[in-house]
Image (cartoon, rainbow, N blue to C red; front, side, top):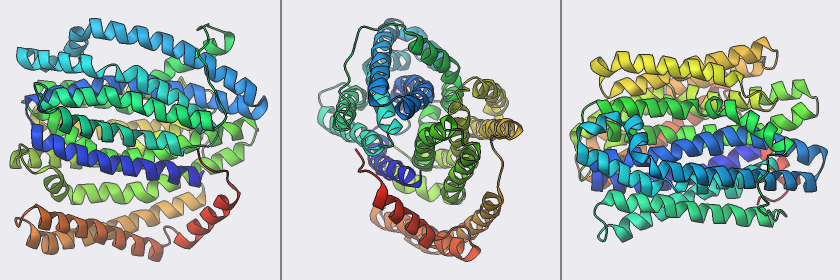
Length: 521
């Protein structure tokens, strides 16, 4: 599992870093104005469906079933199941896309009701959403192919696919900027075109793994009925974080212009550790837990869940504190140029701190939910998730006036902590999760090392970064690099000293696993 986590995490980190280059260009060209608001809403819509139908609900139902078939009945049965799922999924995704294109103004009125007060902005959001929405069926089919690879413990190609998204987006933004009405149009076309390239990459990897998937006539076989029944509740159970973020967009559209963009930039920074750590642990954990549950090894499953939480916290705790302490230097160096002015920097940094409060919870939700999905339970996370969404909406309404742009971010963080508490309590009550002594001890030591790192960051900010700030982008970038490097070094030294982790032991595990693991596809 650790090797899978590092494979997914490494590729995801590369994608996130390239995504920052893309976001720097967006910030310089669009800033936090109306075109930025319109594009971010247009980009949110297909990505919401992707997270819910593709990565979320579908993978939650598909990967355990595929892994179980591969373990119990072999290659041929697993391939037939994947082909049936692909045919059914392609059929209803294309139908959903056609409906969305026809009724896009109504969808936009739900997702961004505040835009209706400015007709030009609303129409631009509708136009850009119609351009980006074909990305949804393409990336959902990519998620199916990724599920096949993940079910075989092959993570590299699927984790590398998001790199393509950023490369194509940057290419379209630069290449089409002067031939389309706005940079938002260029970005929107880049989103849909990237879907084709991502699907092509993962399809090639599946073929290399020995699966030549064909699309038969879609039929609701008994296996597909079970898959769809499990998908239904998983639409919310796996996508609570995304639905909460969509609530943030709805509330943000009702706040002053630019709020949606401010929340986007803050969330993008928060998504670096969230996407890298949360996605990596959740992706590698689900097939492992599924095999242990099918093999009737309950104590192995509990130990796996404890180690997954440990792997998640070792990076999430310091990341959360670093984002809170160094919020303004991070936002100002990465985005503070061109149309992204000082006011936008200040607001985005405040929103970033509010999101970072919930970062460990956002990640732990992705770790705990596979504990349910591996056992075929997709309904319990829904019940807990619905309560979390209701809490988020309530808090958003309470915070939107006094806290403005910070309100949606803080509401999402509080709701995430409520969600992870509910998931952990139910698993513990069922005796499917018990915090062992090793996790309890290491978590406290990780916290101590993280606090030490935060103190070092405060010292570096008041000395080194303050001396370089205001002397041009290059020197400010060097100042941020010193902050990042100093914080990582401080955490590494403190973590070793406190016994939060043992780098030699981790390296030894990786060497042993590399020696007996098959090559990644």
